[in-house]
Length: 218
Image (cartoon, rainbow, N blue to C red):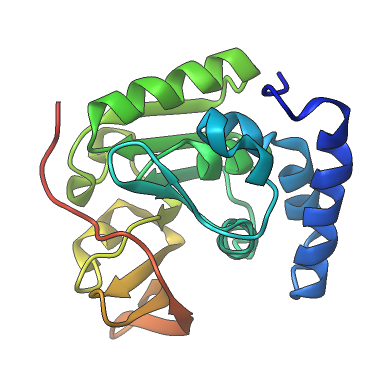
C-alpha cells in the first residue's frame, strides 16, 4: 500500500516519526505501535506523500487538515487511559487517519464526518487497508451517534466554541470526551467526564484544530 515516491524508505521514515513522538513524551507502547503500523502516507494527498511522516499537520481536500502525528498520538494515548476502552466514537473523520490509529487500539471505532465526499474517501481507505472494525457515516457530529451509544470515549477532532456537554449522555458511566474547545484565537484540549455534582473538565493545554461545524455537506 505504499504511495508513489515512498517505496522502501517508508519504514525508516515511520521509525523516525516514532522516535520524535518518544522524545515529545509519548510513552504508551500500544499507541506507538499503532502509529508505526498505520501508513500515514495513504491518508495524505499524493503530492504531499513525501511529507507524510513529518510531525506537522497537512492540508487535505475541502479545506480540512490531517492532524499532526503528535496530536494524534496524544489524543490516542488519552483514550487508552480508560480502564477498558471497547467502543470509541470519533467526530470529524477527515482523512480517516485518527480513526485508523484508534482501530489498532480498540475493538470498535465509530466515526462521523459532515462532508460526505470525505466520508467516502475515508471509507475506501479503511476497506483497502483491511480495517474492518471502523464504521463511518456522514452526519452532523453535534448529534453524536445515539443509536450506537453508549461509548467509552468520544474523541472530537475539530473545535466547538463551547464544551459539548450534551454528548455526555452518550457515554458509559466511566466514559469521557476528549475535545479541543475554543475559537480561532485560542483552543484548549479538554477531557470531560461526569462527576457526582456535574461535568468535570480537565484542561490539557493549547491546541489548534479546524472548527467543528453543524450540518451536513453532500
